[in-house]
Length: 121
Image 1 (cartoon, one colour):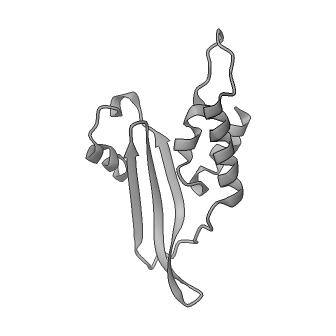
Image 2 (cartoon, rainbow, N blue to C red):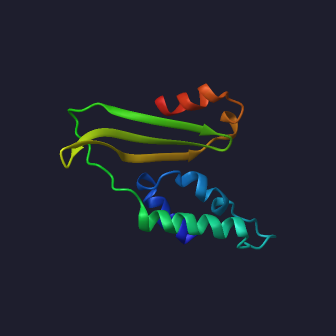
């Protein structure tokens, strides 16, 4: 669990963090032993890769407009805040931060539009 805690600190820098970390969050109860399944190994490798190869985040320019990309899926919500800035004399749209979280049990029955609106409130 210490790896997940470490990686969670950088979740704003990692695209789709919640999707990859989902299987690592499932903590076994006292009767079951934690098994490093193939799904958990793949999740660990994806997060490790993202930590070492994540895209360059832009510093926000508060005078320019922002773009928010939202995706809701069956078990979580992910979003990316982007901005178009001039980099090397060319317009470049890049990420400022990434946001992700698992949905709560009460939100599981929401429709797709309602789930995506959760990021706006």
